[in-house]
Length: 103
Image (cartoon, rainbow, N blue to C red):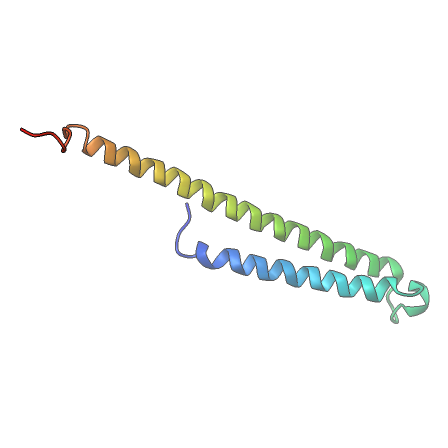
């Protein structure tokens, strides 16, 4: 059930997803520009660079997936609460007759 915090969670998720995308792009440019073995930092191998790059992409993917799930959750909650309010209104005014007739 969404609450006040939901208004802030979605924009934060969007910001973090694009930060992860930016990190992935910079890592891909740095790691794949030239031969990995010649540009590897001391004590780090190419496999570690590739694992880091993969982690960044997967984190971006799952963060953007979380954004879509959050938006779907908000949409379905609003759709459901709108239908409930319409049912309550119809139940309250079911006994009311037409208001445009002359008595």
